[in-house]
Image (tube, rainbow, N blue to C red; front, side, top):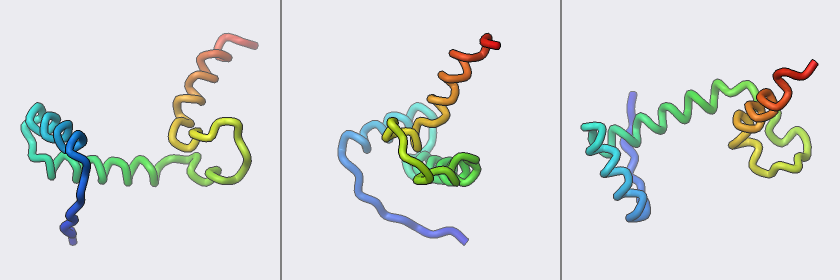
Length: 81
């Protein structure tokens, strides 16, 4: 069963949404709905979610950028023994 959601967003975000929707040939509502579903799946499938809040870090944004940090570390250490 689906639900209808009404949201209020800033004008500049709405303009970007309209441009994206036009470029993709979809409605703004469809774009937002797809984004929410994608975020839900991405969030629920992330294996590092269980570590959020488990320890202190010098990187306050690691919860949203952990994939980037891990990728950089892998690139930096890939050829090292």
